[in-house]
Length: 140
Image 1: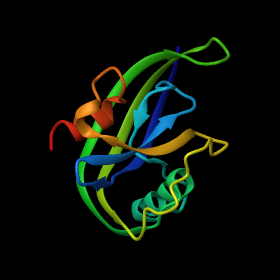
Image 2: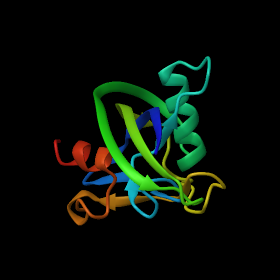
Image 3: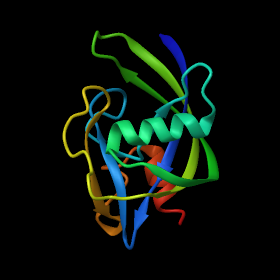
């Protein structure tokens, strides 16, 4: 079994009782709702990666970001090619304020997101959220 460590940054963007989430298009959590974010590219700072990933996945620009948690989760899953992977996922979670939410990307971004949407926190549960999104939203 292939072992893989993924290190990423993720943003908690709230508006009243709603949170801006993306629906995963691929990977171990395909079809689940997740916090926008992703991998830190070589040479990027965590904040640079956070701003880039949020813009790519949601279409919004970060104004401020405050680190609120660092999470770790491990999952075994079957990749599209049939190979099994033991994924160790490390994520730095930021509380993010954005400049405007007028133009949310609600369509497939060509990569990891099937689109972003505002979801009422009380309408989500463990079965519809990724482990990081669940832990962050229900520890508020």
